[in-house]
Length: 304
Image (cartoon, rainbow, N blue to C red; front, side, top):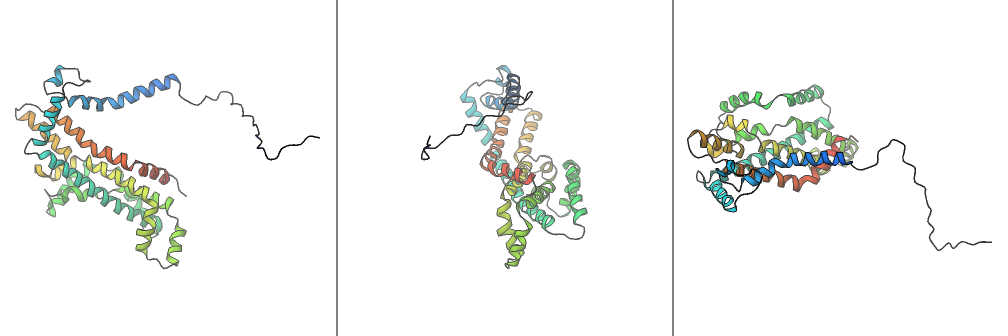
């Protein structure tokens, strides 16, 4: 008669299921690694060129190897020219871009959240056709709206003001569409009805109960709006003509044109350095808020 010691843990060996024939093993093949490496190099090559160009003078831009550094002294000189040229207007352009993008991101995020909440949780006459019309406006190119926006801003006297750039950027049809998906997936209607039974007002349900549950969606829409407003070039070109109101995108373009057309020495390396400085806020925003908007995209893509 054999006895087993119940105090000692027993391990049970389970046989692994054989890999189905024809099914590839997990991992990348050497060919796939080579293709991904080439793709990474192709994607990072422009950034590397920008980093090396900052250390060159304008003459060295054409006389030296384009993908390697030259002299730290040239970098210091380029930085000095960047922030002192035209009485340091580059810093003013940087602050303008931060103002345009920041206000546009926060405003369009709130408007999209309110509109998405209304279309998601309320049923009213004409809601379906109205939402379809809003979706259809996504396909209208922004250049086609430039002239109507200019005429409208001229009519109400906002040409050459900050509002001429900010107000059109507050309208974000794609953001409204995304927020409707986030409200459908992240804020159950039963929870809203329970809050109403407990006596919560509609504003309290929206601001204190609903918004925290769709935080990922808010960050996603805010980031998309921030990037769109930061990279906006054509709208400021149409509605402002004072250099003190230019964003970075328009200001660097004007520098490039005037330095060539006026017969002065080109400042290509300084403009490249300014372009690099202009993308730093975008990098910081994505790195600091990346965990929110990535999770928001995943939750908004599935409906609960």
